[in-house]
Length: 182
Image (cartoon, rainbow, N blue to C red):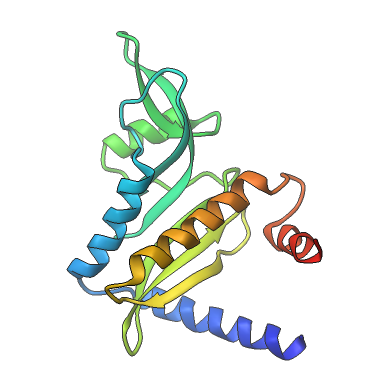
């Protein structure tokens, strides 16, 4: 078990270094993977939504990363329009910042997924889990391949399940340990 944990930490360190290097230009394959996740989730930050909408939303940051998190409808303007914002009290602020093309950071009190790319021997895609102020936890990585779409979507769905099921008083690590025992 100790050896496995050391290998896991080493792999995460290498992934962070590769992700920090990023990619110089988003390849068509990378763009396709991000578009596939966006289209499956269907709602983008600041998109028009029904008044009672609650669900998942995505948005892209300036550095070609995609974020996935929980959202809800917020009233905007005077004509009964509603737009998708973060599922936190200041969610409407993120809407206006995003519409002004500011680089929007997810708030600390909302768990989210960050999807980005890095270069090593091959271009790879990474899915990170962010909770509170804790460092991102790597939950999926793979080299960019044509058949990667289904694996990536499965990883995102599983992580979104963690976000929904994890009790607020436990961390992701504690929650996953509890799941292993059952």
